[in-house]
Image 1 (cartoon, one colour):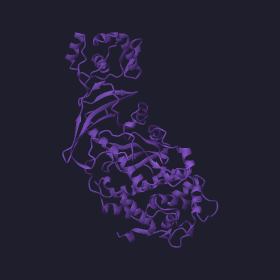
Image 2 (cartoon, rainbow, N blue to C red):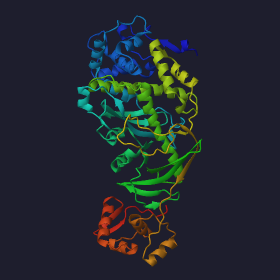
Image 3 (cartoon, rainbow, N blue to C red):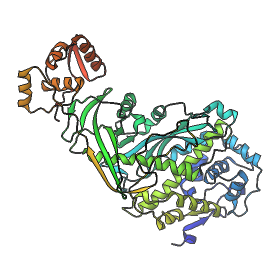
Image 4 (cartoon, rainbow, N blue to C red):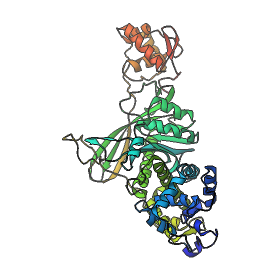
Length: 542
């Protein structure tokens, strides 16, 4: 099918009012039809009561066109929007376009994003699912700059830099991203002085039991993990190395069961070693916590390799911040304008991802990672200028993406650098990764089994019973030795003095306070005054 037969010219047939002709985005209009826009405008009561030279419907598409051409001014964007139309309306002035944006406000754009946001890939699409769960990821971006004016500073404040205040106020954007397609399920944004977990909680209603949530170390707070688990979703979240979870039971693959807050989790310690094509070796330790407790169905090494999918959300931010926004400062000088502008950019990003996924799924087995966002964006810009909309399932955007699929992703590594011109410190911490990009010739995952130092009990009879039962030691340190001892007789109620005597701990009064603290943390269960049992009936080897 040729481009001529696969597209329909806009503005030549349809609405007779030429003032409504600029209400289009070229091929992307198929994903955001005028009927949907009119319904949202009517819902928010911002539709005009009389026929204006610049109708509200045109205003919505103009805001989206601003997102497509982020480096151009109002009038040049208007020329792009009307360049391919026949009998288009008179060119307005910049003030009229500013008033049009102000009349709309941010609410209709937010509602439109809520409509287009959501999972894009089918469960059978390559890279979308792990087993029967759709993989999604939380992450935030604090690099979105806004104009440094009084009204923006009143909302966002100023950001403290290393040598003073940053040049521009910053917005923090938090998204829930489908890692397989990099499509957005939801987004919130606001000042950077609020924690990422606070923004992420607003997106938890979008999470359900069909998803596996991936997240970095900033999301390992006990209460946030409990909130994610309450949605019914599974999760695989990296835990900061400063946290040392209690070893309640050692599994057959070396991972172990623990409690974080009121949540039962499995912890995987692994060392990942990358060997570059020049022979350099770089090792990094990862500690992952997951609700997938069965090592037979979900082997530890497989989960470690799955965690790499979390980085897909970083690629999504790169496409949004650097490709679509071109790394520029936003246009608007006040909060309503900033919200409207950013919602418009998120809508355009999601529409482009939708067109890319539709194209990729027309060729079964093709990974969405191979679709180029830059090619899709440039083709969408051309189609908007030509004012043409596709007829078939795969239009010009999809054909352009399929004709120039990226090669299969290759493993590579390089140093992560902070883009700071100066620093008050004469030397920086040693970066183990190479300064320039290197191809990875080998990637090995070494699982670090839980510490198995014996508890050194003084109760000889009890030691013999545990040895006869074939129980595996559960780790060194007083806390893990206590759990190992109590797990050897799961039905027994223990008093602190009995445990202290069995383990050779001399300060029994201080140890009793420690056991009470472990009960407060949910690791032990207090059944009577000064009497404890294990909180969970786990054996040392599960």
